[in-house]
Image (cartoon, rainbow, N blue to C red):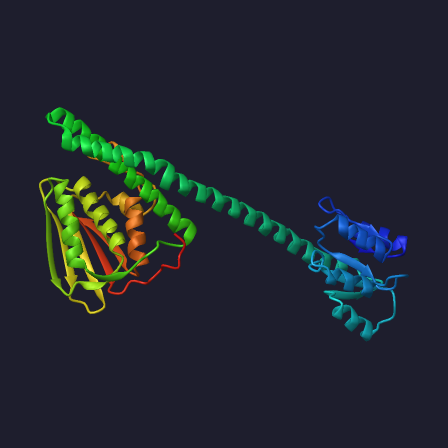
Length: 365
């Protein structure tokens, strides 16, 4: 916006600043400038003449700075008067970002104006990005609501009904069919939980931990026993040293279930899965899960990437490819690290956890 009581000055400044992506507003007085400010709320820069009748540039600047919706507009004073240091200080006190004397070199004014045009474009881009992110967050919250309630409610019914059928069926064929339905329902529930975890990680800055005093040996024994009940694969558990610490029990259960389940699915069937716990270090506990079989070398660099996907022994794609990604996130959320080594016909995952996990209950879930 250009404010000057002399029409020739308005024409000259407009000609200097005119470009296709700019709308230049002109006002011949302070009152007219205020009317334009009421009608337009996207002004990148205001050039104000100091010496104007009725309302001078300083008075106009004070009104602009005094209003919430206009106080952010950068103001540059331009005057034809003699150099006056008091005027300059008065202009800066009124909120000006610069004070220029006529005649102004065209390139100087263009350079100064371009700085504020660029800042304004960046501000508009940030506003758009904020709106897009806010909308994306809203969509994400709706997505989580659908996953956690609208999909899980009928899935829970399927799980309960199929479990009842497994217990009630007397013939082997019906029992096997019900068991397949139950297995599929549990796998679907696991996929939903993985998607919810991915959303928490991506949009809420990490996983929600509830650390409490825990004996890792007892936890692993429970997990191994549960997995033995649902698989014919042998899992051997061994331990040494002090296995106590403070960790999130549910998250470590999820991590172990994923790692051992991954070994059951992809490892060599005729070799046992070995889980060894080492608590001999004072500040950390280490666990190793090893099995027969190798991971293809080309998969190792992307093994912990989300949506990597996997295939079963029949070549059919299974799951969403989030399991190992979430395992890694659980480990890092505890302040630990995970490594994988696969060579000479064996694969070993090594997880190191500090004995005290950080409490992240302040993170949104």
